[in-house]
Length: 144
Image (cartoon, rainbow, N blue to C red; front, side, top):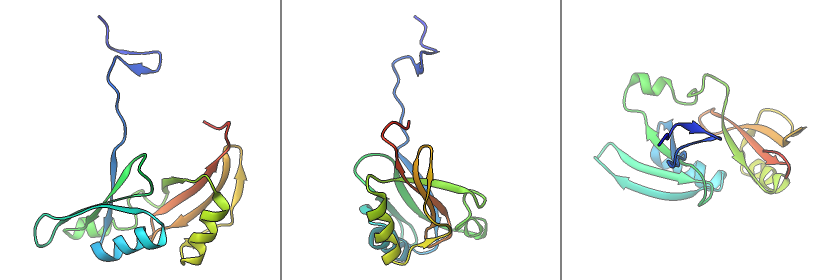
């Protein structure tokens, strides 16, 4: 029985993206930003060692989560805010663009452009507290 890639899937295995890491400099400041400014939920905050914690946040119960990973050396510190080389690297989907945009603005989130309409939906680029660029997107219902 062939279990290779056919008709858009690999055999019977199902994979999904569960978590990504964002390099930060301070756990408590990062938690405050993602929870209070961006409206994420704090999923887990477990001390691993006196210097290291396992901190997970997420915008909703569905989809990928974010591990807030504190930089532990000079090389990791140099990646704070630049994990994608200055490109938009994170994509936040919303079902209410106007409300989310206004909430973020009122909380001091930095937008680097004005909202715009694209073929796939409404979008605007913002930066998290570290300078990582995010797209805030409300997809059109017919967009994939």
